[in-house]
Structure formats: structure tokens, C-alpha cells
Length: 234
Image (cartoon, rainbow, N blue to C red; front, side):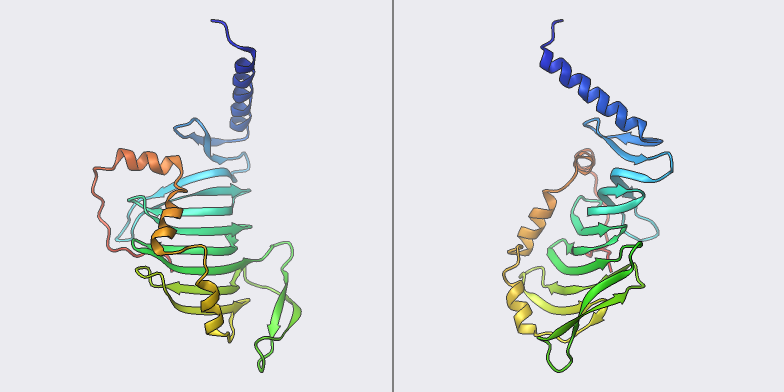
């Protein structure tokens, strides 16, 4: 069979990439598209894309999660699903710790938006704003040593998932709850990228990896018992 040169080159490159990927892994799996996932390198460190599944155990609900590892630590965006395939969490990681905006859902929509800051293990110092107690609009920049691996830092927002309205906001600086102008924070959050709980869930569900979609397709007729619509995330 004759093969066009461009097609032949593409196949050879694809084979080379696949062999290179396998060569970096002590253990690995292949998904439906023959992509390498769940790679453990020869130093027994998790690398690249991972999709894991935890079954229900002793009354605790099971879940699936998908994201990336770098040298054995979570890195970038991780998405968690319940065993019915509904998104329950979107978390950001750096150096293996939560860093940035993390969102949590129940079956009705967005319930909480958290803000975290991870500490670089190689440089445990950070520059933070030290607000004046008599005037929350004024602050000084201070360099401090951060002992924790990750700390609450920024605005935490709590939602009514049915209406999408904000029920409470909190402002943190390196794990310290500080006074804040509640009305100003609410007005800022009203222009959030998520217009409603339904919109937030729709956006999150678009990120389902093919491994989760494949499992859902195989088990769509199987009824899975769940306790309630809570995320299971504190």
C-alpha cells in the first residue's frame, strides 16, 4: 500500500513520541485515545496527566479526579467529580499545594470560592500587605516567613447555589481574617465570571476528561447511591 510522505512522517513522529513517553515511565496506563496517563517515573514520582478513581468506603462518598503531576506533586488545575460524573471541585495547585482560586459545588451549583497562596519550599518568605487597623484602605508591605505550606490569602466567597447570590464574604492575609468593606466586596463579586450556579456547573462539566466520559458511558444505566448533594470538601 502506497502512503503519502506527509502521512508516513506523521505516523513515524507519533510512534517516536509514544515510545519516548513510555521510556520515561516505570509504570503507566493508556486511555481510549492511546495517550499515556498515570505515569510513574523510575524515581517512583508521578508525572504528567493522572486520572484516579476512589470507590465509596465506609460511608464516605467515592470520587474521581483528573489533573497533572510534576515530580510527584500536583501542579495546575485539578478537577474532582462524584461517581455520577458531576463536578464537585476545581482546584489550583503549585508545588503540590493549593494556590489560587478553588471552587466547590453541590448538585445545584457553586457554593464556595476560596483563595489560597502556596509557599515555595525553597523560599519560605513572602511579601504581604499589613493593613492599618484604624484604616483598612491603608497598608504597608512587609516580608515575612511563612511556616505553612499553603495559607488562606484573598477573598473567600460563599454562595446560595439556587439563586447565585452571595451569602458571606471573608478577606484573609496569610491565614489572618482581616476587617473588610463588605458592601465593596459584594459589589465586586456581583460581576463574577460565573453568572449563575447553572452557568458555573456547565462551564466546569465541559472540562471532563475522556476517561471520566468513557466511564460514565459504560455505567450510565447503573444507579449509584449517594448520601446527598454535598461536595465532601471541607
